[in-house]
Length: 253
Ligand code: G3P
Ligand code: CA
Image (cartoon, rainbow, N blue to C red; front, side):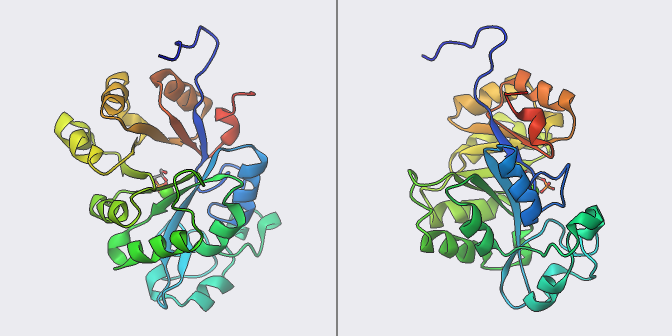
């Protein structure tokens, strides 16, 4: 057994930059992901959806309205239109012109440099997106367990069962903020295909962390936007902290 850390020491906890270093740069943009790498995050978290004409793109909301200068639903818009939008200015003029990234460009730019936590956002809107995502990962040989830090997660559990079948060697995560998903039965069911159980921090307890661990899964929790929230999750002994502020989770601070 590994020795319990003595007072003042912390176990290693993965520092996951939520949509990039979102506290300081526009979410789901190269500017925000580059900053997360500079800030020594262990992983970047990205949200993947699909354009009307089939391109995989990285954006959180199912509409472009909040984070770009365009309007409309991601799945109703062509890739050329999506790519013409400014996804940076809303966060500050210094980010003007930051485009919506493609999934492939994010894989190519960051794999091997930083872990990538890939969220399939609302996959029920994009039939077949699981196969498409799996193909892009396989094309790059990122599905070999020893190769890369890649995790795939979603709030859509059926989609994650499919991902587990398509990419049996890639760790799968389930996301929830629902206490009903923390019962012994629910956790047992998740553990049949998931490697990570990733709840919002409002439903995290020490008991939950122990249950998840005893089923052989790891636990990552979100979304940290204060030092207090980060400290709570360190106290709870989670394995990963998904944060807008990578500096709050950095052991050097
Ligand atoms: O990675 C966890 C977190 O991203 C889930 O919530 O809404 O930020 O995608 P959301
Ligand atoms: Ca997300």
